[in-house]
Image 1 (cartoon, rainbow, N blue to C red):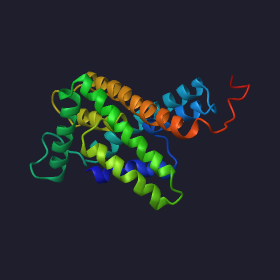
Image 2: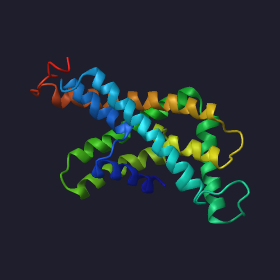
Image 3: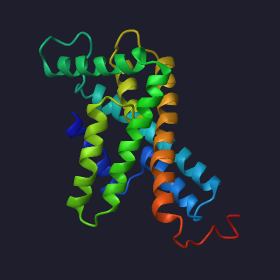
Image 4: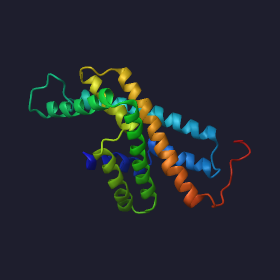
Length: 214
């Protein structure tokens, strides 16, 4: 599962899409270099987060549930749909019902520390193959360790609700999203953006925001 999950960030980076957790590193780093204002950082992260929520809900409902790829509690035992449902139910149950607030936050920190390092490694290569290799291992590691990625959880938890996983509600989902978002933000801004800006970029000349932005 960890290996398969890497496809998501590969598609984002190489196809030029916008992922909230990756932007949590890249956009604040632009502000640290004086190329963006705090308002522009907030606007970008807000719009991308809304877009990611809508995209995740669309995939969860139409491409996962309505297509029958993910079954339900009534799916015949042993069928692919039943096996997928059981796997989803296990993930959603753990993330939505059994992780404490502190656990979700810390798993969010660890997750986006690794995800943003994957993006950072991808930036080091101009070749598509190098970008894929740079992304692969950090993302595989965060999935294998069970860390919390807010955008991934925007799919897992709603899909579980749509599939009828018992005991899981939207209140559990929103709680997980909020804590995972905060953890992801700290992992990106503190442990990657600020650290790597200080080590490698702070002495580089950069044009500040234009007078219009100010």
